[in-house]
Length: 242
Image (cartoon, rainbow, N blue to C red):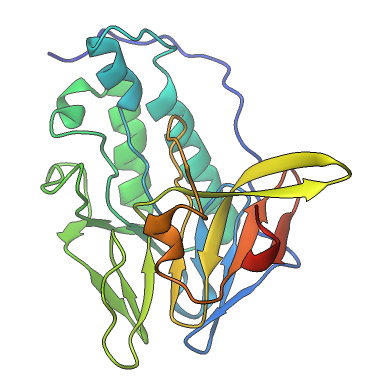
């Protein structure tokens, strides 16, 4: 059943701003990572986000883990800020935008209105994911299994690449750790090479998987990570990552 109405709350948000120094080159394009975890593809005026996992909080509550139920609100607020800051005309969500098949029914009315305001502002494409193989059809935008954007294929989970194919995917929620001044620093990150880029999860309550985990490491022979710090995005070769 739909959750009860939620009061407005003053929510902390991750910093939002396009990196002025970090760039990611892929398939002859210059991609611009955002401190929020979004990615701007300027040549196509397109903003890409992965793994929103809307209504994860209410899903956890149904299983007895009661945490503040504002993850959808915080995620949508950050998404709206990222769209405005980027000036994008097209938004592509790389799957697992909803935490489960009943998430649409649990979204609070105010959050639903915010989501529809976003899809009314920019052309929106919902790519299906493993958590949401059949996204709701009444939220605006279109639904696709994948999107071909110039030389790029955008999909939820990384796939075996055909000759010459270049890919942007989500699914794994990558994070990386590095030693600095005697302490370990762990951050969400982008990870990529000259064939593919895996994006960090955008959602407020999403976990993460170390880039050293076999599921991620097996996708790359040699890669770089772009770690999302408080004020900057930092690029490191994967050989420096713990």
